[in-house]
Length: 71
Image (tube, rainbow, N blue to C red):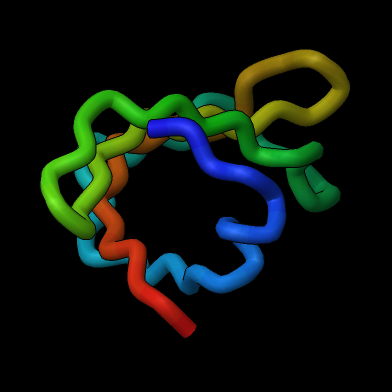
């Protein structure tokens, strides 16, 4: 699915579930930006794999499902 930035601004993402959540190491500050890869899009539902990094090291990861809807 390819979207322009303008199209993305008109959408809202609602997280529906978090599975296989793992906290890999303690962190005293918030994670750097979360990196997520979408695996499947079916209609308005998207399954993703997310990984949180701090100082280049993985601190958390999860399988996520979200609904993407118009604002």
